[in-house]
Length: 532
Image 1 (tube, one colour):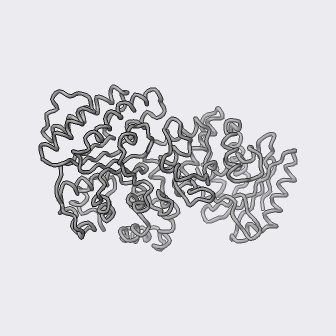
Image 2: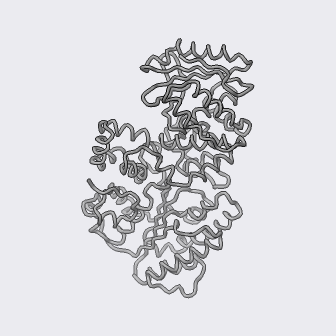
Image 3: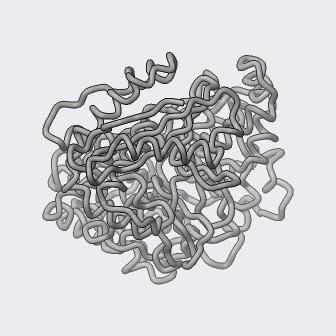
């Protein structure tokens, strides 16, 4: 079984170690063999952008031996070597403000100049240093240079929530990136990667000929693994995982598809996040690898500061223009920010070109956990772990403990703070309910998913929909929720149970538990419930 390249980014190291490499060089060949020479692609973190950059580095360095057996080795690529200036902006230190940023970037330029044995002639500003490196390296080798910029937006994104400092960073980055336009005759090929496409960073206002591959259907699977690649390249790991989990390979692929597949960057092709796939194959446990690999506090604070919920973004219709030009970071709406960061992805549109949704169960459950924790803490109290009693209630079939846990959850919701989110959710779902009713349902749903309980909302049956279907340890729970506006909780709970039975919501599921809930709209608590 080939070694997994978990945590590895350098193409040369992976190939020399004979580690598993998913061959994308057919698409890379199409890019590098075109007449165009300036490219950009945006993808979320942990999607293989750095590996792509190192692959291009090796390719333009003429390291043909590393590509033996890969798709590009069977093409007419000439393997001419060029001097490669490889800039990794994630190395730039932003911890000490803009002065530290300037100093750190200058340090990176000095390092590159030493590597190429170039005299900077006293230049101290990062932009001027970059200009001299490009021109002098080109002159030294009597060839145009190849420039690769990985994570171009990292310095700017570090200050997205500090507008005054962000403006200073933008000015620094603008003077830096304008050197690519100013020195275009000395550049054979330019490739930039990043998470965002926020225009004020300076790149897109100066590079008029930059080719954006981000939504190009020909390169929708350039980063990430397709399901075919998963099956073809990881067959031995799938066999080992299926054996360990005592299921078939097909069943394992089904589970992985639900949990990790679903990222879509062109509205058509779905891909797996490489980071999640590789970490899953290390221990065969379905955990939230991608979500936990970043800084969950940043996204948690973003959601909390704006009183955002999970459900309000599902099904938002967006245009091609939204996907191509999502706006500046200070003014972009939350759906734009979340889309660029990878928390929302593209689906086929209904009324617009695209719909937004969460890519998969991993991201949906993780976001749900953040939201319900935010709600509880926004209510003024400290966070209390309600997942443990929920899990115990479901495991033991204890409806009373379930209701008590849900009441503790509902008591902590700052309803007024989330009124705008509820209004947006109601508009999208077209449900004829009040904002509080929407918050009851969406909060309970986020809580269940955030506790990693397999939860389906409004499951279709032959005679209608149930509000919630839970699957826990093989036991299905069918839950119907009613809201009592006039204190008639007992009647509402009975009405909910009659709806479950009359519409046969539980009939498709063996040994299903049925729970009918009535929430008192005045006390915002479950006033009555019926178990069936």
